[in-house]
Image (cartoon, rainbow, N blue to C red; front, side, top):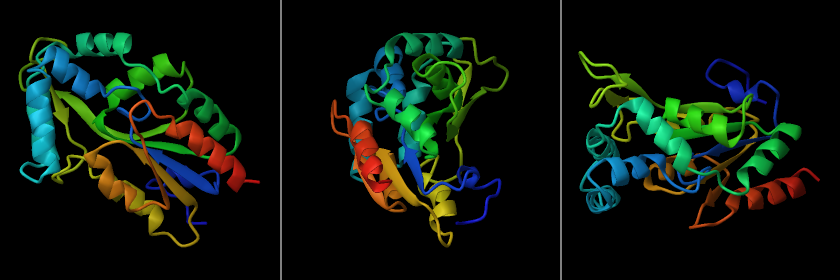
Length: 224
């Protein structure tokens, strides 16, 4: 097994498997950032056009995401409150989370979203005391403003890549190790493609699918 370091905390319990996953639209039934853009920002048509631009290489994901969130001027605390009322957990995730803890399978969330939003949603969706590593973008105040005033917050990207958060970099810390665990990845979007290449088995979530429960069944078989 690879050595444990601050860069590879999921190895702390010497697991045989690690489950990496996207958050928005994978762990949840809807994307929180899309929800904010569609309902608090410039709306779905413009967002969908930008998604197409990214998919066909006309625009970097980072630039499209910044454009989307720039259109949301609602104070950040209000955004979080609205999302907590409207974003729901995938039907199979809570059971899978509990099963993974019982079977020493660390879950690592790799998200292009913002950590405070993810934490607030997990507090509601899983309850207090959940134990999941999150590697994501963050949020910061705009110069001279408070994040909880209109137009006061901005996304703080995880890295300087065109993705804003290149998920494959985090996974490569594990995939490059000798005698590493078997690694799974679940995702549903363009930002997940590079991450998927670094893992052993990919679960791509379809609309209203239950890939997480399917994964639990597969892992049960693998563990005998």
